[in-house]
Image (cartoon, rainbow, N blue to C red; front, side, top):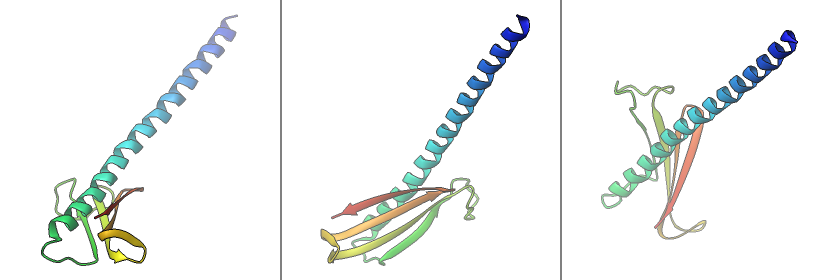
Length: 114
């Protein structure tokens, strides 16, 4: 009887640990997704800031999340932005802006038409 109770309790504990570990992975992934989204947003903001002074059709940069002034693929967020003038595949009035933010292995994109 004791062995059966211990086996059942061990199974329950292992199941709970497995669920907790998978939930922790989801939470970490959400945090990375937020960092990637903010990198993409930074790319959009940079284009919109520079639009009156003229801008290149593509931008790239990074957010120095660890404040060491060195781009680090494991610690910093990166963005790549492409700007397309209206016409053709861009149905906006002036420009279509697509920004892709990346943090570690997570990517998020933002598309703005104006």
